[in-house]
Amino acid sequence: MVEEKFTEEEKNKLPKHVGIIMDGNGRWARSRKRPRLFGHRNGVENVRSVVNSAKRIGIPYITLFAFSSENQNRPEEEKFGLMKLLEEFLKRELNAMIKDGIRLRAIGNLSELPKFAQRMVEQTIEKTKANTDWNLTLALNYGSRQEVLEAVHSYSQQTSPNSQKPNWEDFEKHLQTKGLPDPDLIIRTSGEFRLSNFLLLQAAYAEIFVSPLHWPDFDRSAFLEALKNYVSRERRFGKTSEQILPIQAS
Ligand code: IPE
Ligand code: IPE
Ligand code: MG
Image: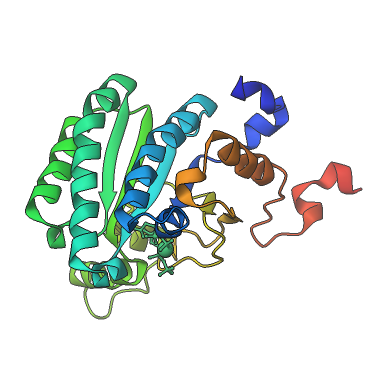
């Protein structure tokens, strides 16, 4: 059992929100001498198992970086293939999401996605919006910089030119992640040490874990390893270690 892998103390420290940069599908396919879309297809297959693991462990929020704003610069054929996979995935998972109490959300500029994909995302969001147990957010055509520019625009339209400087709590309501807690842990697969425009502000104090595995190979045990690593860390949020653990330190 997964739960047995964590002590009671560790269970209390588990992240509430995990963001995953699902990278490496192309390299995974290339190493098998297969086309990139074969890698994407296998990547999508992996989503269900990681989301199920998160549920069993008790992590209420998962956000998956599925398609970045900059991925719009990829070949048309790859983009179309990715959108068909997204549509297929949502069609196939809808009943399970409803049954398991998973609420789907999306961040990113959906209006620039092909209509069929946009429609499927919107319908799934609508059909799962009453769910409250688990929260799956897909970042689709998402870029943090674009999100911030839109938030600045939306915030400034609400306020007068000589109003006070915004505080963070007021400003973050204009981000696409409104209603989601900040990610505690960001996992990136495929060995790359960068955020690639993913949740740049929200991840201000996120712990980062980089796995060498390509996303289609990132299985349940790799996920548990990332979580084990996370619970062993001390999150100081700018404070000193002594402030965090006054008893042990004295
Ligand atoms: C991640 O895999 C999926 C998307 C970005 C859509 P990649 O397609 O980036 O795979 P690599 O990085 O080329 O191996
Ligand atoms: C980041 O991966 C975006 C997603 C995983 C969806 P990329 O493969 O696009 O990132 P870079 O270009 O290597 O930074
Ligand atoms: Mg990549």
